Image (cartoon, rainbow, N blue to C red):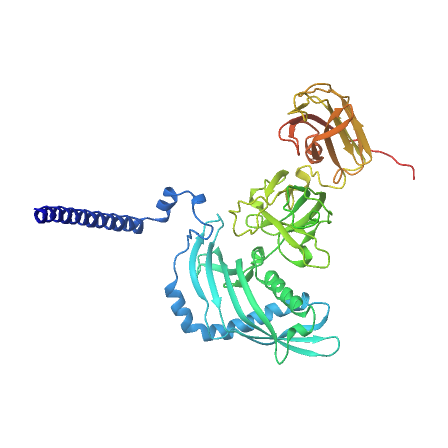
Length: 531
């Protein structure tokens, strides 16, 4: 009897296992089929389809949608003709770059030039091409290029002591985008008058320096000086907006050459909530600003010690050659004294976003790397006032950054008040506003037991330098045994210089909530001093 029961149970269990196995295989087969169908659907998707399916914030930072077409056919042909290109291009590059190397020659060297320059046997690889629709009367093409070549480049360096050092530039790795402009279009073959070429974007430029028969590190500072000189020469000789014009047909092509088109006025106002880079104390921030990263065109602010919310209020000017493509870069560093400064964060703004003749007041979020904008870490913000002045437009608008706005007065009227939370628990603070302007300091009356005080008081300030003077408004909680700072507002005079009079609401820095309602009026008034 037990044998029969065991047999029945075995058959039931066996059948159950078979059924489970079959169902499992059917389910796995269906999953594989669905996965294959999904992969096939993804394979048929276009870039536009993927952008509709997922918004940009869901993609990792290394995912880039390129509009450039592949150029396998061009790379094959370039590899065939590269020996001839090497011979022709080497002489052309040498002739153009050598004078710029001499221009940026470090002061510790007596001369700097090429003793040998060839591009080697490895041709660059063009990874994509795109046509730029910029509205100009011509054809603009961009070629993305990668080059890990084996060039033979030897620099002939001579010191003031008469020592000659042959320095080899090797292990060059380059990735960038070249721009070709065919303009103007004409009705004569080849249908364009000239070709302009330029390095539109330099994504990567790596190389190593080696003294032939020696060690370059034996001369302190030489390697860094040469490295900086080479990068400046590349930037100043071929990097956009610099462009080389090659005439194809006879004619005047001076309009294609690099020339200033305007001036960018920048007021570096302040930064706030900067990341602290020091273990003891706080960072000592300073700012570096540039449109083109050349040593003689980069601007540096003063260093403000032990401060994560620095106020600079410094003014800088930059020459602009192409407002449609250039951008302003701001980098905030922590001054480390004798050591190299440490980057706190950086930001940039496209000049195309600026309206000519109009001041743009912006707060820019600082990121670690300008190439990777998806930085969720809070590194702080920087406050700028920007004004782009095209050439020939100087008389058509008011420039608040001009030096003529000095020795005048500012009338400040308090029409509104502050809205916010008191500092004390279970009670309302007594509010008083301090207005500070360089040597001058005025106080409002104290408004007792109010979170929405109204002063309606007027103060006059003599402004000796409208470009650099600032107005600082502080809100205090006045108690019997002391006072506590609730928040403050830092104002430049730019807007009131432009508009003459305006009312606005300003947020309180350092307060969880609350605003200040202010009425400002500018009255030009020359002041005469005794000589």
